[in-house]
Length: 499
Image (cartoon, rainbow, N blue to C red; front, side, top):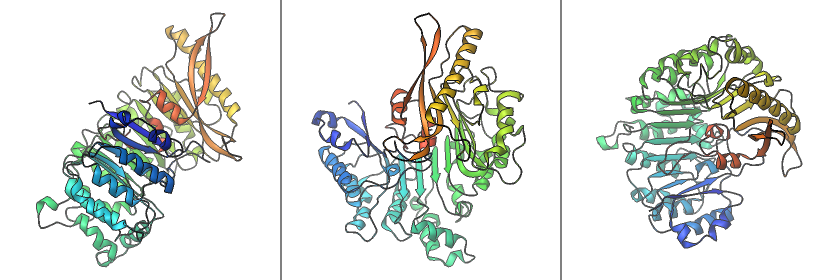
């Protein structure tokens, strides 16, 4: 039977799906809810987690009623902020063949039907992918936290992909942060709850470990380094690091220790994505000890002096295998200007097809005169990052700079190789009127690039502005956009994490 996926935008698609034929809905195997963040002020690092509102939640439940029992294999909702517990319970009890689950609940702990979530325990087994966003209202004694424990305990040996995320404003996050900082951690309430995860049980089958896991993503963990060292054996030792192919850590302070300790234990690692969780100094230690990477995305901090001019030379071991590279400093961007310039132009292996033969997607912090940058011949997606405190340009001003950049690339590629460039998308930051909004803000703009022949026979550049949804539909394999937007998790019906 054909596998069919439905991706729903919170703001617009529920009602249209409700009018679909029974035949069309009968072929759906994967359901994905995406927050519609087309309009927002500022670059999107963490998606809106408002969750489905009453009418939206009801429409989703009506859609689920139209599906056959056990029809779905994959569902992803947590990056949209969650569903009501009533809908979650109905989902889990009717769709018992799920192998890939990613969701969270946005019901307050004391609301009716909240406790029913635990009754879903026998509804599924041998999960391959599990994701859960621990929302605003959770506390250590809450039902969803116990649900996570039960799910991991019963499925940890079959899991291939795992995603766990905290809301930093949740009661649970505050409890963990306070208790993990306590010198009497063993005596705190939260620590006793954590022992459910960390303790050595009486039965071996209840011991939480992850021998089959090959994709791990965690976001906004409190006191991250302390959590990793809890229990006997420590939680950090519960993973088969030799099996890990994809590791992503977002917004976890002091992840440096974990990265240094596991760097030499991951011979299968292909994708490493770190966002606001470590310093570049740590990366200089870690990168030479990793197998050649295909994807390396990092938003790093600077602790003390800025990186040396040749700091990015440490990427040399990965340059022949990298197909996607994102370099960004979340400190003062001026600290890395010389380092970025050195990487582009004057380093021992500057950015060119000769030295970076597989690079297709690239994101760099470039400032005013980025038109001097000549994208390499293999590049399909270029992301130019403007720090928020830098010179804010309008959409038209930025579009003109992108045009000049593409024209330079066109002339150079035609002269050198007698062919057209393959660049397809350029993304920039603009300060302008937000669409359908009265305010002005800093937001990303996406341009689809086409090289077309004029009536006179010359080649010229045609730029068409599109939304991030347009880019996804036109170029589904350009996954760098997901690192920035942070709206989606699974990349396919098999539950693989987008990288």
